[in-house]
Image 1 (cartoon, one colour):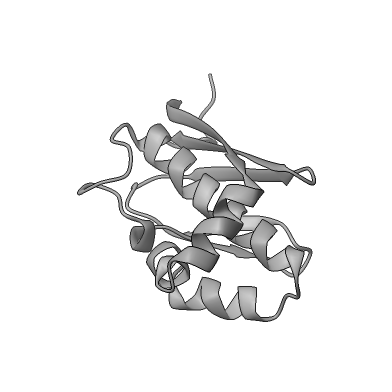
Image 2 (spheres, rainbow, N blue to C red):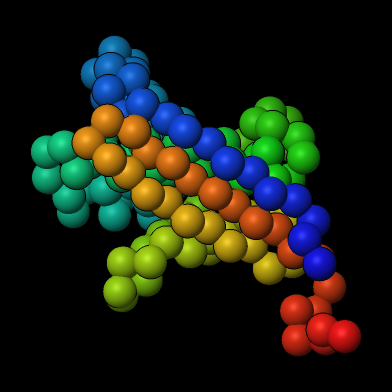
Length: 124
């Protein structure tokens, strides 16, 4: 059963500007493991990665039902890609299955998060 869904749309150019303007922006948004993953990328791909994680954490907090703040912060959620490049929530405060999708164009990144409760194997 679905507990919550969240979506977010973020302008990549806005995230690039915030990254250039505030030296702590990357470490505020990304966990150390995410920062390591971003460091393996080059140029605009780094901005896309950062914007994707920012947007995904916004979407997660909406699915969780609180928005970003004291209940869910940027460091509480970690999203890493598997060997095939699919993003996975590797750390998050919800006690249940969590699903994520990240997609982008040249200008925008769109993310969706679905949180589930109960055993998905027990369908009637």
